[in-house]
Image (cartoon, rainbow, N blue to C red; front, side, top):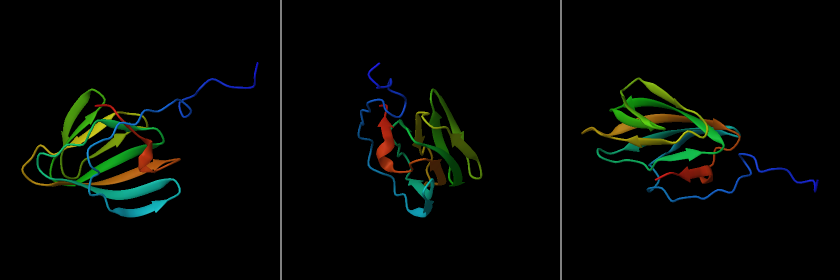
Length: 121
């Protein structure tokens, strides 16, 4: 053996695909292993299908109705409802309604930065 090890999930080569422009996402709180921010989408807006290598997310809809795609399943999530997005799960957010949609996103993991985004579109 040469002392090397096979590539694991975190070591695998990553191809980053640019997503749509970043959401208006003010940070409400953050620490070394978490970040809390608001996500706002105007009617008709959609984010690119993407996943994260180092964090999971928990989205709580605070106003409007969000269309959320997790893997191959899509559903509508209304005000007061929440959805958990596991680490590595492809997901997309859209606003199918006529009113703006606002979410609180709680992001947790070993690295909450935006540069772990992997595009799937």
